[in-house]
Length: 186
Ligand SMILES: *[C@@H]1O[C@H](CO)[C@@H](O)[C@H](O)[C@H]1NC(C)=O
Ligand SMILES: *[C@@H]1O[C@H](CO)[C@@H](O)[C@H](O)[C@H]1NC(C)=O
Figure 1 (cartoon, rainbow, N blue to C red):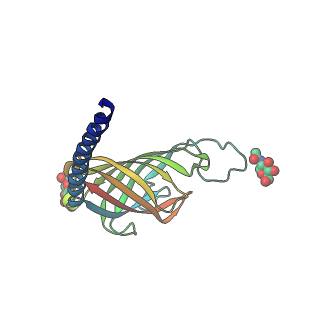
Figure 2 (figure 1 turned 135 degrees about the horizontal axis):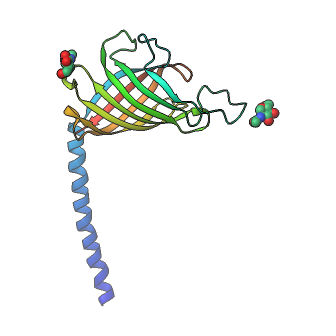
Figure 3 (figure 1 turned 90 degrees about the horizontal axis):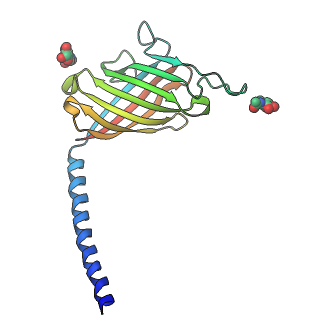
């Protein structure tokens, strides 16, 4: 008797919990959907100085190669600091919309994967003075890399979302132009 009634009680409890959970998911996804902001721009990861008088990306730690056959221009353990220009179009002469400031550590052999910490600081329009903080794993052998927007300041307080980056005109030795899409919800 006891055994027979107990499963049906847990079943109703389960249904009740399911209803609560479903409602919570629906209301949060509706809210997120209505507040999505899409930002599109280009980042100049400039190790050579083509955007101005000096580079905006510099290697601050250069690790020795672990194999003489390693011909990659990057090495596991290399560290770089970034103060890159963000532009509206792919040319560095197009309108400047902000800067990407942060650092990256190469976390795979050949330096093809980076652990990236970046602040996107906007200097134009409605978002002037606001910033987004991004943390990501960047595998350079992938056409599209996804990073996490972990927060923001100013207009972007309490922001979360994701950033997609892909090479526009780029190589591992000298850097170049990276196309960026950011999707933010608040
Ligand atoms: C480097 O490459 C050569 C030729 O492919 C190979 O014989 C040698 O074992 C490699 N050395 C290392 C340290 O991997
Ligand atoms: C952005 O904000 C800074 C600091 O408040 C200000 O000096 C600058 O003129 C602003 N730029 C634009 C394009 O609004």
